[in-house]
Length: 99
Image (cartoon, rainbow, N blue to C red; front, side):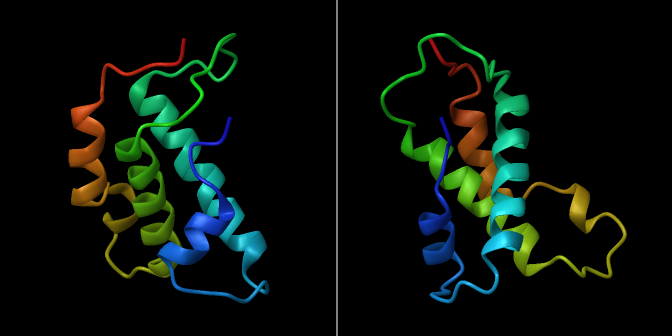
């Protein structure tokens, strides 16, 4: 189960065109993987919930959008930092897990 969709990410970064879909999907997949690792979510869980909490969904979108929009950052540690908003959202649900 994806924590966010490509359509949601396209709305987040305000694009309607499909020419960046592959890049956007790459960042979305990476953000999904990052959040699952941060929350210690087992991607092979047997009974995932019907819905993803809004805070988790928004954190994935913030991460993916930030990485997409700042992919050529000149600051050496910028790509290793979690955007403030995403970090705060994830800290609220750190104990949340599938199943």
